[in-house]
Structure formats: structure tokens, C-alpha cells
Image (cartoon, rainbow, N blue to C red; front, top):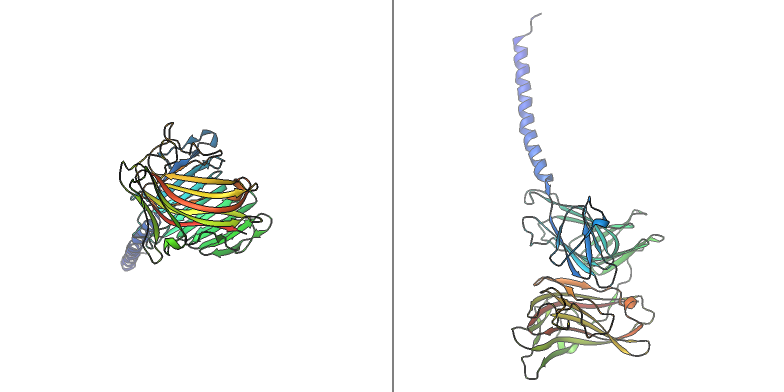
Length: 421
């Protein structure tokens, strides 16, 4: 039986039409799928700020880890960062897009005892064309970190911090985490955090200034009472003279004094400590506030300060380690009634050596190591629990925030001394 030429022609025509449709739809769909899902690695860097930090990346192991210096070290997915388990060590991890390495999407401040793994870190290859977010997944195995996660609204970011007990997805903002084998504590300083208890599969949403905890035995603890700030006018929205005493000391007398002023307003106020210039000789410029708060029966006490070092004439903190562009001091009394001091310094220029110590060499032991910060960048510091580290502390007398040295300029955005009852 002979085949029909008409049937063959229709078959070829229909098949050609279907192939054309498949190409016309499939190729753009495949191209769009590639554009929407293609990713690249971000630029990730960890820098030493004080003490000692090590890092390693697979296939290397912890035994092969290298020491991280102040010049920093590039990282990639799978890398681990380990901060020495003492009260002096600190490091900073930054994550930025490869095309704009100075535009930091997220930064992680690591404190003593922190062990962090970068499980995933990918950024869309075509950020202007895709709806897919950048994805960063960090695993905190132990210790304490702070996460600063601020980005423009047009950039979509999914940032997750995992521990053995919880998984937390973070909106743009600022957050603190502390974890051990039995306990994970999470504080939302600014923004929103979705906390999932892994054992219970329960979720809670934290808003600004809220905190929670997940324990191995008790699970998700709900929203816990907030810490109380002992500092009055720590956001500098009101005139200084009502709550703060101003410091403008110089030596020798008659030298150029520094200026203390509030700049900005309407939620954007900050404190400027300014003694700009060179060859000015010694000076101290800052503020202090009387606290007089007893600590009997309290659970924790932490100092939290946001600041930016804009200029410093002397490298590190001078020859005695006492002339930092920012110094935080807490005066307290112990059980015997003796008055003592806790001091933490910061600098943004220079590398410590024998002639430029990174501690105040005239201070009594134990001494805090000064922390290196980025010049001109807004930084966040949160102390360890001072009730656990200050010997026999009974009462907080006062808090001091000042710049010391020759030429200095430092901007302070907020000061909080957070007491948990």
C-alpha cells in the first residue's frame, strides 16, 4: 500500500511546527533559568583584631590551620575560623560581592572561643535580572558572634546562622549569638530573626531589642525579658550636659583642647570626639557618666558600643599603649570596697610591636588587649559577660568613653551597658 504524500507532508509540517515551538519556548526558558539560578562566590575575608585566630579550608584539617594576621586571609565555602579560647582574642569576617569588594553585605564579629564554619556562600551572577537571593549559611559550633547584616532593599539576601540547637534566618539588621553544647542564646538588636528550635520544629520571631534562648533540655524559651540599659542618653538624642560630664584634658596646660559635640538629630545623632591635627601633644577628649548600680543577684552585664575611628595621629595606641583613638572604661568596686577599672581600647592604624604595645602597660593585670578596627568604618563592640570576668565586682560606679593621644577624631553612635536581672 502506497503512503499518502499529503499525509507525509502534513506530518513533516506539524513536526516542524512543534520543533519550532519547542525551540521558541525552550531556549528562552533555558536561558532565563540559567540567568535566574547562576551564582558566583562572594569575596570573603577574615582579619585578626586581637589575640590569635586560625583558619583552614578543605581538604585541610584543623591540625593544618594557619594563623590569621591583621592583613587578613581570603576564605571560601567550607572554610572554618577558630578564635582562641581566651578573653583577648577577636576577629572580623566580611562578605562582599566580587564586583564590589568594598560593598560589604554582611560582617561577623567573632569573639574568644568562637568556632564558625561557612557552609554556603553564593551570590547571583546577574543580580539585576534575577529574583533569586544571595545565600549565606553559617554554622556556629561554639562561642559568641555578632552579625551585622545591612544591605539596600534592591539586594535580596538570605542569611542563616545555625547551631546544634537552632536555625535562625536573619532580616537586615544586627544580631548576637552565643552557643554551647547545651544552650543557644539569640538577641535581635535591630531587625527581625526567625528562630527555629531543631528538636521541636517550633518557630519564634524576634523583633528589635528582643531575645530568646534554646536549650537542649527545655527547648525554645519564648521571648525573654529585655536587658536594662544603665546608661542614660546613650543614643545622644538629648543635650550632653544633662547626663554626661565632658572631658577636655591636655598636657602641658594651655595646649589645644579637643571638642566634644553631638552631630545629627532625629534618630541619627552621634557623639563626635575631635582633636584634629598633628603635633598637638597629649590630650584626652571624651565624656563620662556616673552609674552607681549594685550588681548583687544580677545575671549578666555587657557593654555594647557602636563607633567609627575617623583619624588617629599615633599608630596603635602609642608607646605606653594608653593613647587610643577610642577607650572604654568602667569604674567599679569589689567586695572589699576597693575601686578598680576595666578598660578596652581600639585603634585603626598601625601594627603592634615591642615599641607599640596593644595593651596599657602601666595597667594592673589582667589587661585587655586593644582591638584593631577598620579606619572610617562603623564598628560594633559587645563585651563578654562582665559579671563573669570582673573579679568580685559589686557595684558599677561610672562609665567613660574617650579618645586619648595627640590628633584623634572618633564618632560614637551609641553606648549601652546592658544589665540582665
